[in-house]
Amino acid sequence: MSVTPNVVRSTELGAPASPPPPPFTVTEEAPGIVPGARIPLGIGIACLILIALGLRPAIVSIGPILPDMINDFALSHTQASLLTAIPTLLMGLLALPTPWLSRRFGRDRAIIAALFLLAVATAGRAVSESTTVLFIATAAVGVGIAIAGALAPGFVKESFPSRVAMLMGIYAMALSLGSTFAASATGILTDLFGSWRVPAGAWAIPAILGVIAWLHVERRGKRSPRLNTKISSAKLPVRNRTAWFVAAFFALNNVMFYSYISWIAPVYVDLGHSASSAGVILACFTLAFMAANPLFGAISRNEDRRIYLGLGAAISLTGAIWIAVAPDVFPLVAISLAAFGTGGAFTLSMTLPLDNAKTDGEATSWNAFVMTVSYLVGATGPVLVGFLRDLTGSFDMPMWVLVAVSAAMFATTPLLQPYHHRQTVK
Image (cartoon, rainbow, N blue to C red):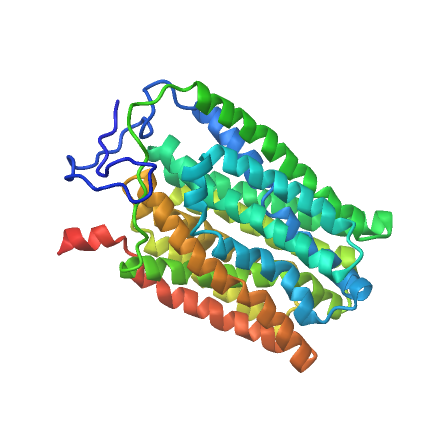
């Protein structure tokens, strides 16, 4: 089988355009790879899982140990929120230059370097003795996560174009699995060692495993013969209103996710739970989030995913209202509902840029645009929750703000039909 691209492939910035070639058709082989030479599906899935496992623990592990870090560094809740907000902010800021890094140094090399930086920064944060070093290491964590996370979907679109939804569901599930393990184990390790530093540093290990996995992908890429063509750089879809709708939905989803993983454990510590008990509640959130990832990826088989996006948003809204009204009434059920809906919407949110793209170049550009907008907005969630906690002295108001965010996410779902579907209808 083969691929007939619809754009000129070029790694050179500003390369002159040429007349449009024949219409794009997707078949089994990835663009630019000789049939039979691309990475096997099983190996691709394994490497994708290993990289994903290391991309969230450095953020999620902060929740259970945040009260101890606040005490050790004398932080306000607003300052403490930056430990999650800074990585999220950088995931947005670096989404645009990341495609250039891929073209300049190679996607696989950029991913390897990013994962290595993530491992070093995670370990460095655990041994920091000053707030300055703490926040510098946190920023480096964000850089590593941002670059590796922005490039992984392009690998999926290039190598397995006919299995995008399935593989993005697996990728999202692995992200959640890493989050779940970090959430559940961090509090236990903190109680075991009597310090937050050991569990904080332990999450460098999954990033190292990701480096090892992607070294294999990079070596295989060197051995694979490629067609005598070049990879193109597509324009950012800044004038495409569907791209803005997708970015808005993903942004609201990120506000929910990062606010909950940052503050749900402190919320329950404030309600009288122990650190380990609050960690279990956080782990329940990440577990339910993870369970939704492959399910929504499997049942949503059409590019127009609005029904399932609406379902996820509605479930998330139900859980958010429950947490705001009665957080201590069956908290595991309430947090599971919020997480399951948010997780299902998250999986499909990651797929939306790919649904609107026809080539790996377009996929990278759409993904970069959506990630820039959504993570910049998403970074405000933890900060807003921390600020309102300082302002009001409780988490009541912040939880109602998250209800409003979830309601807005639900209201956005009718606008998410892929733009080329609307063009077909017209």
